[in-house]
View (cartoon, rainbow, N blue to C red):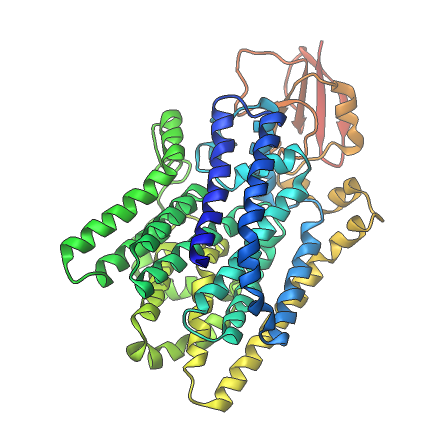
Length: 519
């Protein structure tokens, strides 16, 4: 029953995003239509979520130390959620695109060299439309934060297929205490939304093998469709599951091929509105892959196992928000367990191995691209702990895990301390942003609302500013502005050579921006 409820919840999230999409495509993205749809879906969502919460009270009765650490992790992350957005990609397009959609009451591809991601699937980003329409970026960050908690719960559910409640809760803690997860939880990115759908897909896939019920395979395919609609590299989950289906399903190869084809087709159909949208606008259904914007960067040196090991060490130890070393610490145990492990566990191991390989060959790979598979890594880790026969070694590894989790909580807590003065009202939002935005790296705010007061409702042509989210006056960026149109005002980072047509009427030294007015 709970699997069906989780499926309905995922359907509800996906359908609501698609409703926003079609409202935008048809130019109906206004406050009335979004408000009515939001109320309707919130009502349905609240009805569905009551039963899983009631069924999962056992989640709270597990080991109190683990539960306390989970609570502290969530509390530390919530502090970061309640402060203004600082993350680069959120200010670049995750929030800027929904803001533009709201202003234009439509969803269109934005050409040019800045907002080219507008052609890519944006299932999670569209959930930020009502957040920004009726609130601000903090509401969008809260949505992403909730996706992180939801993925932790799904990690618990996946682990419960293999281990007891205490270890299942530990798996959720191992996932949620990752520095990469903690950082993503305080941003308006989309990676935790993708992680939730990936975890759902794998959970349903395991239920399919456990219960021999074909409907769970369809549930898994739909969840993978929503994952690829959230982030194109979600195709890696689909590819991994398809390969496992071909390897482990029915003995009859014909049945295996048919089921694999149906899963792939169902998943692609779920994401097809975005693929069609991208093809119509760019002639490439998976834009910007295989273009100059996002070219393949494969080289034969990548086949060198030493290079692969170096990338793995960078991923788990040396990235800016690294993946937890817990996975590396327990990994050697897999050689003692794998041969006698049940088929369902071997499936998890294979999905993990394939996801690592696919991550390795993704252009511009980084730690957050692997976050979608951390639930699986976490479940494997606790299963390996359960399989230990040496009590002393087991206690030692538990102590190491708690130590690493505690360090991660302290690290994220220290990183989020800067938000507290703003949250408590001792520091204004503008003061906070002036101290923490990187104006040399593309960020911008209108200090003192000086530009807004000068230009009023007049649209401003913007040059040289990369991250546009905090612009609060009407604007059009140079990358997609019509070349034959002239504007009364031009805002640029640094001086422009505009001859005698425009004169400088305002200069802001902090952001190094100049406001020009047409003569």
